[in-house]
Amino acid sequence: MRGSLDREIVRRIIVRWHLDEVKGCYEKELTKLPDLEGRVTVQFTVSVTGAVSSSDLGSSTLGSARVEKCVVNAVRGWEFPRTMGGGTTLVTAAFDFSPAPDGKRVPTIVDTAPSFEAP
Image (tube, rainbow, N blue to C red; front, top):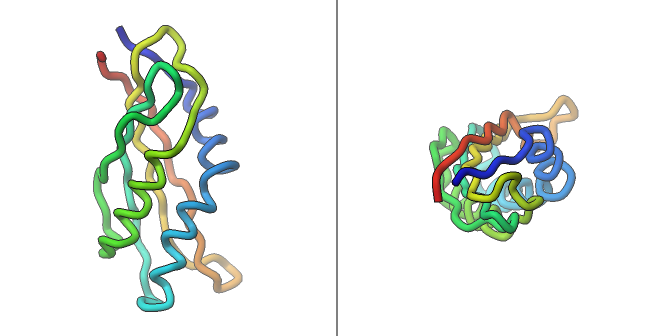
């Protein structure tokens, strides 16, 4: 059985409730590596209850294992609504870490692409 989550709901939850966690992972390393920038993609599974049951690094151009690990671990604690139709939902979320117009570095969520996997 496959579950599903609305792509926009997933995106809003990440941006409103969890982007600061991702930003914190990044900011810790900026003191050591001030030119650090790139993209981190995380693949995670949302269970029927809405809890993240697994989280793995999909890909990265960031070049910082510490930030990558921190983001993957942060995602493991996230919660989403119950999946529609039961089952699990596989989500891929990409985060760009780059300079903002004001010179501060902030992550932005690039994409969330819910896909599906059978339990």
